[in-house]
Amino acid sequence: MKYQITKQQYSKLVYKLIDVFFKDAEYTLVEDEYEGHMSYDIIVGGEEVAWVTPKQSSYTSKGCEHELVIYDTTISKITNFIPIFKKKVFSKILTKYFSDIIGVDIDCIYFDYRGEDIIYRKKLKKKK
Image 1 (cartoon, rainbow, N blue to C red):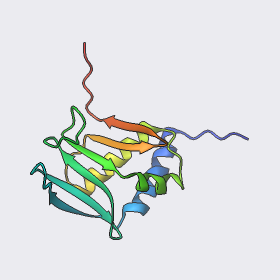
Image 2: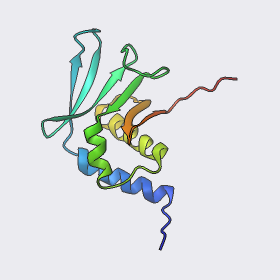
Image 3: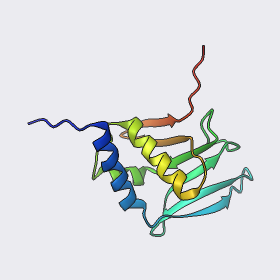
């Protein structure tokens, strides 16, 4: 038997799961020793799970002001509970969740899912 899950149902499910995973998240503002800019390290239970890079960083994707980078181990833990089959919805929820926690408008997200680099840009400008 096949089940259909709507975008709204998937959004609620992912948000609740993310909230459980990251409810005790702490963030610290850290200076990059090589480039001199400030970034946010996101820590849960003493383990770094993600970080937010500013525009000045060489790690930030083109066109991003603040990019959320989720570590592979974190994505692996999340996907043990729910598959990422709606990548755009998943990405939107993660950026909104961490934007609310940190208080920085995160407009991009980067993570690796099953060997595929996923980059989502909230404010993608299309060429004419």
